[in-house]
Image (tube, rainbow, N blue to C red; front, top):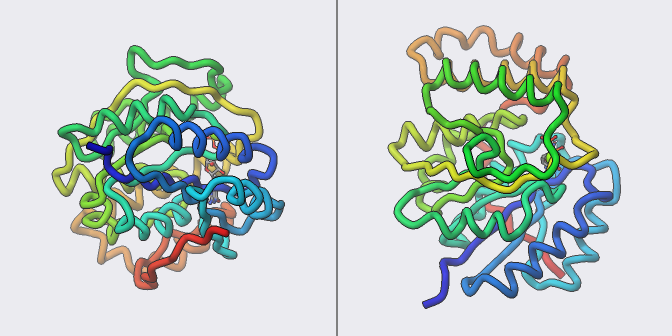
Length: 277
Ligand SMILES: Nc1nc2c(ncn2[C@@H]2O[C@H](COP(=O)(O)OP(=O)(O)O)[C@@H](O)[C@H]2O)c(=O)[nH]1
Ligand SMILES: [Mg+2]
């Protein structure tokens, strides 16, 4: 029996220097080692470099590779919210970073563990994780502070919410998609908390990870934005949320000042078709 069909999304912003070997490795590895249908869709937005050209060139060599390109600065979360609209095309839908932090075989390990659960997430903080190159000290510190904030706000007991490698069942994505609003790097909290609220089972699995040079995260601004966004997710589920409506313009102004993608309203639902030559 062949394995479930898999749609792998790769969010990409200005990745012309990092993405090519990653696309080739994933398409090649899954082509050879995965018996189910495999599709890889790069979700680009507002790139100011030639990421699109690189993706199109590599897609000529692999029929499994497609892309979606959005002109607006919708952020990693915004890109994934758009990409996840393709969930109807596969049994399993997941995502991974464009810089090769997660090698293809480690991603396949996550996919194979989905068994009885609804979502499997890679973890760099569980015993058994293999870290080839750690994040810088500042990044690790910020990450642990973020973890404490997330744990005290949501009590999800997930050690690593931010690892870029995750995979979910189609039904999960279809059920929680309307609750996805966070466009910045705190998108993962929005996703995981919506799953928990809906009663889905999340399995955290130690993974393999290499921190790559060329991060798109500006630590100071990004940390503030992520803090704002997790508080926002918390408030969405609080009884006071409607009362805070008058503060929306202020919120919009702060995101703008932080040069962060605005949280989305989910009214503009459309079903994108991945493009491939
Ligand atoms: N589409 C899209 N992807 C983004 C954006 N910002 C970051 N990414 C992607 O998110 C992933 C993780 O980003 P990265 O810079 O490696 O983050 P880090 O490893 O946490 O420092 C990469 O695939 C990036 O290209 C964005 O604004 N839009
Ligand atoms: Mg990275």
